[in-house]
Length: 171
Image 1: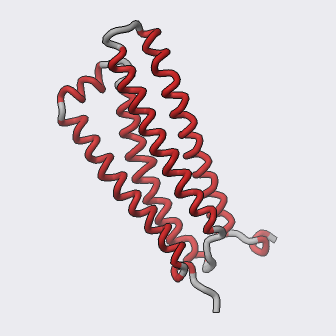
Image 2 (image 1 turned 180 degrees about the vertical axis):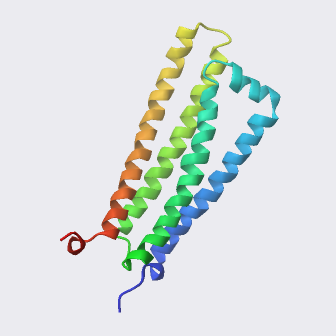
Image 3 (image 1 turned 120 degrees about the vertical axis):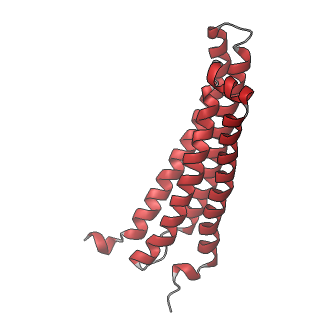
């Protein structure tokens, strides 16, 4: 008897981990937004210091790529095998997707924030050219983590495509 996808403990575990990550990231994102909106000094720093807007970008990435995208991934991992009546193509790819995506997201948020704080603080004491020199390596590192998120999204897309279509479907 063929095991249904929802009977595979590992599949269920990772689908739930996407949901749990979504919930955790949403609480972080909602709290971050409330702090930015509710604390005058924080809002002023973000709005008026050089590169303070990078802190807003970190917040945006938590909300969009962390909680919204994780919810979408969980839903698609849940729905697609049921629609096509076959198991997910590769659990190994699901695992890679989860860990690479989370590593990339956390790195993006951390380095966006560090760049925003470093740029904002430095802008009080040094020239804009010097601020750019301070922020540039933090943003370059953020870009590396952003690339990890992109790679994770390609892993996900490949896995979903392969789940939906087998060689027999394409002939």
